[in-house]
Image (cartoon, rainbow, N blue to C red; front, side, top):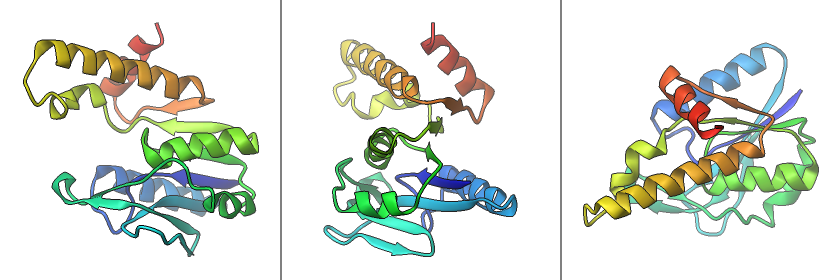
Length: 173
C-alpha cells in the first residue's frame, strides 16, 4: 500500500507524537508499504519534497515549543499529494496538516484513518487566559464537538492509550 501520514509535527522535532509516527513509518516500511509523510516546516512560501517527505510552509510559534502553524489550504501541494497515488490517508493531527489531510481524502476519495494522540480536553486551560469557569466549559464542549466531527469522517480511529480510548468512546455516545 501507499500510505500518507499527515502530521503537524515530525523530525527533526522531538516529542511523543513524532516518536509514534516514526515508529509507525518504520514498521509500515518493514512490511513493504511505501510511506509518505506530509508535514510542515518554518518557511513562509516554500513547499519541499525530499525522501518521501512533503514539507508544507508554515510559521514557527516559538512560545509553543517551536510548533509550526500552517493553513489547511495548500493548493500547490495538491498535485504533489495526488502524484503519490495514495491508498490511504492517516491523519495524526486535528489542525492545519490534519485538516489538509481530510480535504485531500475527500477530494481524492480515499479512506482516512486517524490517530488521536492528544486529549485536547486536558489542555483547554491554555485558551482560558482569564481562568473563567464559563470559558473552560465552552472550550471543553467545543473541543469535544470538533473531536466528534473529525472522527466522523474517518474509517478508523487509533487510540494510543486506554484513557484516550475511553474519552473517545464517550464522544460517540
